[in-house]
Structure formats: C-alpha cells, structure tokens
Length: 126
Image 1 (cartoon, rainbow, N blue to C red):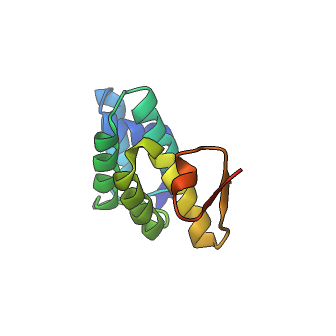
Image 2: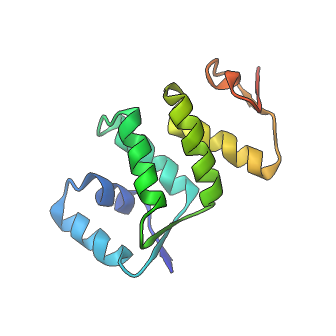
Image 3: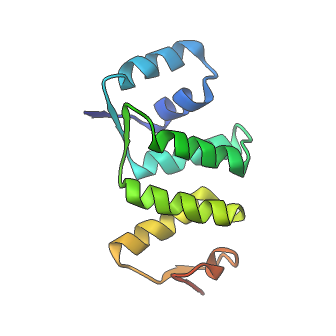
C-alpha cells in the first residue's frame, strides 16, 4: 500500500480541481495509507483555507475513517480524537488528535497554554 500526502487528501475531500481529484482517486483506488500528520494537516487546510465548519470537519474525518480504500494510521486514536472533537468542537480537531496521540503513547499530562484544551482530561495548563 502506498501513502498520500496532504495535497492528495485535500483534493479527495475538497474536489476543487477536477483533474487533480481524478488523479488522486486513481492513485488511492488500490488502497492508500493516511498518516496522522497528513490527516491533521488536511483538516487544518479544510478549516482555514476552505472555511469548513467544525461539523463539516467531523464528517470529513468520519468519512475517511469508513473509507473503503483509504487506511488511516492509528484508527483507534483518530476515533477517540473525533469523539473529543465532537464534544468540544472549539478545541479544533488538531488539538484533540495531539491529546489522543499523547494518551496512546502514555505521555500524559499534555502540557498546554491553551485554556480550552487545558480543561480536557489528560492535560496540564502551564
């Protein structure tokens, strides 16, 4: 299985360039792996560049988790991050994913200056 970068994943989700979207589909059709870094970057791009709402970001992550040919790195971590993000969309998916990666690695508490993130279990406000 090959991997995709952020641009490919964004083209699959945003579908804003038909030629690139078709190339991305062809590349991913036989199976493609999506790293946590690519997932996090792609969600950031959808939010900041394409002005997608928290609800739309959650749906995109959910769709990717259930995708037939795309395989997400650490799906258990992504599932937990998505659940936290749905509880507190003001955090942003990236913060939720960072927290869940640290949790899985056994490296809590997660130190943060972010007041909202610091309210989550497993964090410590500095």
